[in-house]
Length: 236
Image (cartoon, helix red, strand yellow):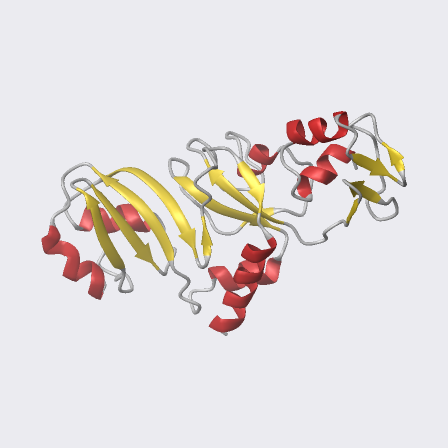
């Protein structure tokens, strides 16, 4: 593995930021100061240090991505750029936890922890997901009761009760616990309105980092990972 990729995955910033760490002489491999950020390393055998602190190779990876529009929530696609393309990684074990529509932005967790992903996506777990919803027409409060008790979106489908808070004339924050196909858009259609912009802000205890622009990502902090795993345990 390349050193810059290893350090980026370990949470030391983007590859550009890692390159700056190397340039400043803050990185050592097996006790030797490194001069090239693209140096090949054996992440399981070599000892990597940054500012004298040993960096260990994490077998489990947890990445927070602010998914941009025009990118599909998949590991590969023949027509569109995928969320993994945003990471510029060659790792074959990573996958997105759930899906956001191609025109939806916001929080997407990418990991290789299948057990955690299963629990976050399980319908039985009722994991909260909050969206910022921009509407074509002003929000009509008469539909709030239907949203809060469970709105019907088709002859066969009724949503679970959801939480709603209006933040502007055309904007609401909607918290749901399901992942039905195009659910938020269909809920708003049932409210005689249409979604013009959709962004996911939270998934369980994980909140989108406001500093991340669409297409940017960072590794989850140890505190965020712990919260996700504790949330998983609490839901059992």
